[in-house]
Each structure stands twice: as C-alpha cells, then as structure tokens.
Length: 438
Image (cartoon, rainbow, N blue to C red):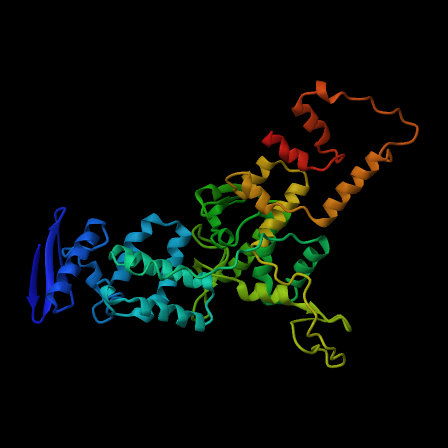
C-alpha cells in the first residue's frame, strides 16, 4: 500500500490478490486521501474496482473514427458479449448501441457520471423513444460499466424505466378475420404483407421466423417447411404446408423468378429486401413490413358510402364527405404477433391435442398454451348452450331409450375424461386439455 503525490493531488497504489491497483484520489488533503484509499481497498476486495493492468475503464466509450483499428469500450463489449446471446438478440444489440455511441462518443468510460446517464435517458425520451427501447439501450451501457467495475457507483440511483406490461394477444372473430384478409388485398403494395399474413395464420410462425425463411427451408415434394432459426432452440421444427400456405409460398416463388430468374439460390430469402438503390437484394431478408401492417389494420369503411379508405377527418369520397373521425377499424390495435395467437386458437378449437399444437407452434411447455390459446365468444357460448340442452334433456331425440345410469365411483378417472371430453362435441373441450394434467 502506497500513498504518494503527483503534483498537488494524492494517488494510491496497492496490490491485492495478485493484482495491482493505481488510482488518483483527487484530493490534496492527506486525511481525505487516507480515507479514500481505505475505501478503494474495500472496493477492490469486493471486486468493484478495476485493476491498473486492465485498461478497459480508460478506453473511449466509442472508437475514434480517425483510428478505426482501435476498438472502443462499446465495440469490445459487443464483440465479447455476442457469443453469450441468442441469434436474434445479437443482431439487435448493434442497432440499440447506435444511440449510445452518438451520445457518449469518445468520452472515457471512467468519466461517465450519473448526470450523464440521466441526461441520456431524458434525451431519448424527448426523441420519442419508448421506455422499453431505452431500457434495452441502458442494458448495454450497464454491461459496459459493470465490466469497468463502475456500475456499483450508480446502481442505487439509476433504475430501469417502467414499462407497461404487454397484454395477452387476442384472437379475431370470423368476420374480423375476413376483414383482415380482404383489407390486405386493397392495395398492390401490400401483397407481400398479405402473403406473410397467410403464412402466419396457417403455420403459427412468428414474424422473425417468416422473415428468415430461405428457399432451402422449403421441401416442395413433401410440402414441409423447416423453421431453422427461431426465438429459442425449441422453435426449430417442421411444419406441413396446407393448401393456403403452399399457395402463398408458390406466389412468392413466382415473384422471385420475375426479379432473379428461374434459378433461385437455396440461400436466398423468400421475403427479400430492397436496397438503397431501389433494386431487390435476395441475399438479405426484409427487416419489417410495419408500414403495410399498420395501414391494413387501421383502414376503415365509411359508414355512409361504404368506401374503403385510410383514417381521416372526412371521407375521401367528395360526393360523400362524411365525418369519419370517430370511425375505427374493427381490427384496430391487432398486432402481427396476434396472428400466431389466432392460429393456435383455431387449432385448439378444432380439436387438436396439446401435443400436436405444441409441436406445430414450437412451444416448450403447457404454460405457454394458456398464454396463446384463446376461447372466443362463439365457442364459449356454444359450449354453454350445449351444456344447458343436455341438462334439460333436449340433447336426446324423442322416443329414444334413456341412457343408462353410470356410477362414477366405479369408473377410472381416465375413462371419465375420455367420455366427457372427447371429440364428439358433447362437452366443452377444456376436459381434453385437463386430461394430461391429471
């Protein structure tokens, strides 16, 4: 342990567990210097102090463009952190790091203060960024500060922003589903979004899984689609293509041939992107179809002239000109991910077993079934009406022999569930789901 002066400021240098620590105490008062030195030794013992031999905290936050060969703390963190991340997260982290790089620039990691972090959060909030997005960016900053052994200085004061809990997705009624499919055909520019909608409704695939499809993932002879990249390892699965899904894939192939010729490379993407030069690029997937999706789900019909149009104050039909400010689309707020909920709900209502649904959708356990599967109003109403008819005896034809009395005490539980929860529609299908739980 050594306390010495450099100019008028005291410095300390000490060794602990084979590491050397050296740091400015930023005071010219010897008593204050001794107290600060004692605090630093305690922090080093707790693993909260970066050793002098590790220069990470002295690096600039973002690399200097004049010296591209030198990596900044941000670039080193992203590089070293990438192997521990899921594929989708590793692709998104550089995107969330851009705002951090612009704000902190070449500021040394050791010079980042609590006030700077708060200023960054306020700026991002003023830019209109959602709390969830800001939290993702903060997680990268926190990871860098932790590596520099400096996060403990701010952890008690800097907290994640409050994020509204996402609601469980919804399933559409039949008329709403037909509205969605018809609305997606309204404009030619929505054609690829419409094909993505059809695939999601007929395969339970997530948006990211659809965007990542390559031609090598399609087995044309067996009509099987291979999901090779998903949200989790369990998402990798095979899905049989029904007529609707197979037709959508075929349309995508015909469109691709118009741009790239008959020889489509297996590595090319079904949903390819468009480059900055306006030319299609089959080697990269489309990043999003958010604009088309929002337009589809917000589009409405004027109650006066029945003309299909975008939201506005007045009807676009000059002869009508009705006030449509309060008119809303019947599928307003419906998310693209809700198409997955829709498909799983229809599978469940169609009598598919939990094991079948989980194998198609790539679920891990049954708890996800309760999250994704919805029983719509019509299904609940029909089940209760059927229950009422059977209770009053209306469910049996006149003139038939009354059913034999069954003594439940003598019937095994598995047989009870099979009799009352079968596919004949005599009881609500919830019993089929509960059978596995028993």
